[in-house]
Amino acid sequence: MNTNQRDAARVAWRNIWRNRSRSLVIVASVGIGLWAGIFLIAFYNGMIRQRIRSAIDREVSHLQVHHPRFSDDHDLRYHLGDAGAILGRLRSDPGVLVAAPRIVAHGMVSTAAGSAGVVINGVDPALEARLTLLSAKVAEGAYFTAGGRQEVIVGLRLARKLRLALHRKLVLTVSDRQGSLSSAAFRVAGIYRTPNTPYDEANLFIRLPDAAALCAMADSVNELAVLLHRDEAADSLAAVLSAAFPTAEVKAWKDLAPEMQVLVATTGSMLYVFMGVILLALGFGIVNTMLMAVLERTREIGMLLALGMSRPRVFGMVLLETFLLVMAGCPAGIAAALATVALTGRQGIDFSVFSRALESFGWETRVHPQLASGDLRRIVLLVILTALVAALLPARRAFRLRPADAMRK
Image: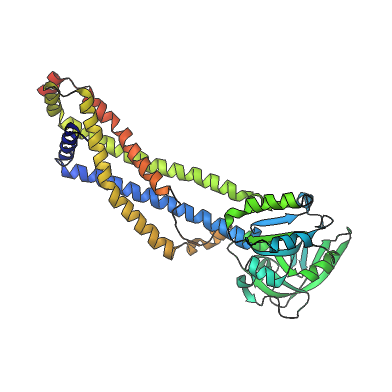
């Protein structure tokens, strides 16, 4: 920076504090705007990541392997013929946390109180406890008692709908692998609950051998669910498995739960709207303040122009003053935002008062805000850009002043 530039910066900084109250208003506005923008992004990041984490850990896992035609109508005829080979390949992969076989069938559950369509999940209890933490979600009763047979774990929402209690009997009916109707009676061993009430209402769990007998699939399964150590490895492993087993269909969680991608896109759009409102308010505040500063100094600016200061330099002086004001407000706003995100990210924000509404959409009732890499940098750049764009109008007004007219005011 040369001597003239240092002098201009010094003059601009001095001009800012000629009216301390007005300058402090802008500094506070920038700080509050930064705090609001950073915290808002962290809050939405926390919501989205928790929903995705819940979908992976409790519902769809990282990967699922099926017969290519199984997804069309979930017909039990479309089972995995090479499930054993695929399981062996998965369990030998160091990136795989757990791989579990399942029999999944769409059927009907009937009780004395009524009936409902459900998804019947035949699972290995030990593997399912690691895959979806089903054992930890049991709110009443037990998780598949040792040596028990014909036991079923139902969701709390389904239990309330069909007036089911522990140890009560229900009847499951499916169209088996041969296309015949098959029914069997089961006893309720436990009632589970997740933050996703539609999932609880639609899914129940029985042992894999019981499902095989019900569906006439003693020698096969129709789904392999896979949980990985890292979310980022899902797509690459799906591609490897698809190449190694071309007769199977391998889907990553993004394809299994496409609503998650819609959610991310929709929430991202909403976030831009909210940020736009914050930045618009900040921009109007800066325009108003800097216009007042230029109007108050009309005579002074006219004298500077008369003494030989170039119009571009006057224009740049107003922009520099705005930039310095913004930079004065940035540290406080960033510090407050980071402190708020750290505190709420550790403790979480409790929305249990809205639990019924949130759980109907599968959301957690406690949100832990978190910042992604690059979020802070983007917000600071947006605030600075907004401030400089807002300063163009006051700077233009100063640029167009005529020295003779300005000194007469």
